Image (cartoon, rainbow, N blue to C red; front, side, top):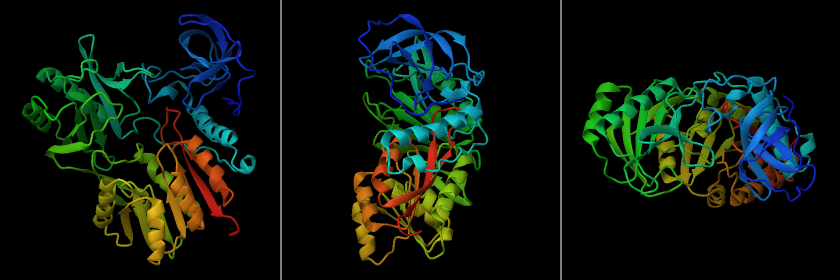
Length: 471
């Protein structure tokens, strides 16, 4: 698959009259960062999910916007050599496995190209000379995802559980999903029958009524144990006792059952209150030879098979020594910093979520790590505090959310100037934008894309940065 570098539409789109339902031939020229194919109808951008570069389709318009069109495939006239038959029939109907239609080698090329396109868009100093390595492939490419968040609704008087269709609140019913760990789907389908049999009310968005909104299941690769959370519209969970008895009797692999209360029509999955219903409050995952206790809302990379490779790439970029003090920013439950603690003198971690900091310090104690300490707070507050206490900042690892580095953290980094710096990113656009601020002070040695989520457009990358003047 040849993916063209980032560029704008050939000319400004003219005012054309297009309406929903119109059909026209369209050649797919490239792919958007979210995986849709892009073509141009009379110079107007047209996004078509489920298409690949070089394909020719008869596109049917489904939505008209001032600057672009959205369409679906009415008929596929010419197919790409990179097109393969998806394992999930609904791969093009919901997010999470959009690239099941694409050969894996082409997926890896696409993810590297996303890095290049993002650099070309935000133009950090010297970006044309950055070394962007080939994408590190994942093994396995199916059955790797350790958590599922399935919406639960009634549609056409039938209970459905799955993910939303794009740009809608229609749930795509999923009784199989080849990117999820098999144990997760077994539990989901079993609980589906329990809810039907017990006639437990499920959430109705229009009426803001019913109880069960979302079911979240996480599986441990280390031991096969599972954690299940019922996200509910109210504190009351009808038939709770019967439900818990059936889970205990029929699903002994589920060792942790919780309820998260998230009332009202909200775009967020998790509400502020989580309570334990049965079993233990956490499950344990093993990474880099360490055990990590995971509470239900805590963040962990979705691909445990590839996570160790990601962390080793971060360690390689940092070139750690036994005398280094490592700053672990956006630390979460401490997985990166604790995994590297044996290679340095000291780990100091920061996170603004108190529960995550508690988990990080508990995980340090669980693994007998006495040279790592995590605090609640923001970088602009903690870095000067730690410096005043006599700590040095030799190395820094950051793994921010998709929004990228907070501007205050960038300011703090540029003031503290740690010599070694690894940026782990899950969003290539915000990474490139952040590099535009960091690069006058730091040099980008290389960028290593890492495929954490095969069959999706999602990509991670590890950026090795070194302080200018230190080499």
